Image (tube, rainbow over all chains, first blue to last red; front, side, top):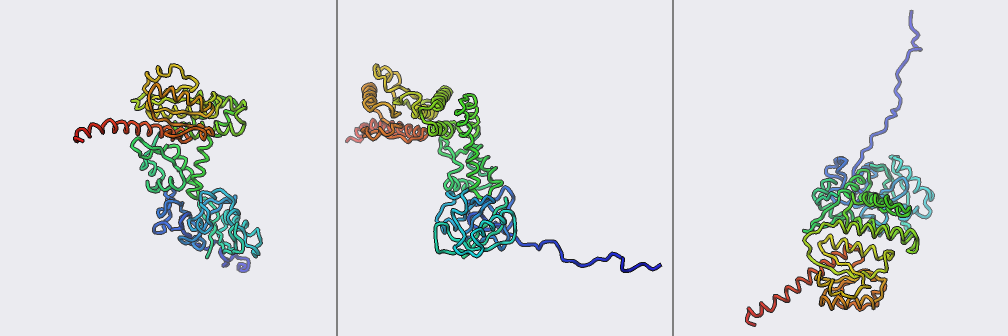
Length: 168
Length: 295
């Protein structure tokens, strides 16, 4: 007896649900320098060998700051956890003075920002929750008017936090 | 109390000794004590707290901040116990603090800070302050009795010009006595109210320096006492500690104003004594050399 060919199970090619592999990069939370040979640091050896003043963190390669690029690390409660040396001189504040202070004391959304004033908070919250895709928006220093600085926001860690890089 | 040398502390944190010194300069933490040879000595508790904070930290700054908060918990525990009029709990809180710090730092960072906090919160007329000041002074006197007698390098006469045990300066003066004793000095503590028969006390002790501490009694009372000391022991280096606003009224020519923290004050007094001894040795030696040179 001939089998009904139309009832047989078949395999069909469908789009993959696996995420594309994104290259990541480690950098120092103070000077932005990568670890020697870009190796993943062992957990007890996360202090930067270049400057000794920051911990090595991991972020997507397209989000990670270049050495000497101004950046800061903010946790999910919007508190500043690290400020790079370049940010210290750009914003004229010392890291030790702003640790655990709200990020809004340093940066606010730029005037007439297209994403609205809540864009910065949203971007930080998503990044601190681990969303990989970097977001871009415009900000200004909290005490300076008439300035627009491009900012890219992405996830970094461990532990999970938002990386804010002020772009040239 | 366990102490670590710089190399041991650096190895525990997995950083170089230079990095550890850089952290001390930038963050003021971990803050080492100095050995008699001026080498850094770190308390194990501080280093362990920092290591734990670094393990899940995002930056050195935030790890230092967390480690400091952890150590600050001792002050909160002591303030809580004193506010609850619970002396056994206060004793236990200070014993807990001693597990992480040296006695000198426990006194300065936990005990005196807690007393200051209670005075600030409730005022020095409050019952909380009355209880805390009495407990603090009693603890410091107990600690003084436990100081092991070593080879005493100097004798200091300390003129106590505080009002009484409830004077906010009193605990600082007890702390200065304690830390000077731990630095190897014999301390003869006298109230500046007592002037009669001063020469008998001074003949028994032969002091090397005089410290006038506390700001409650008048300059006249202090001057009378200092004059009696000078009559009995001759000219000695004089230092002034916590004379407060009255300091502006005092003639301070030739006196040393001591820093407000008892640890630094004790160090300054010991330096004063050693400089005076060195100066005396030079003065006694110089004529002999001139004679030998035929001058």
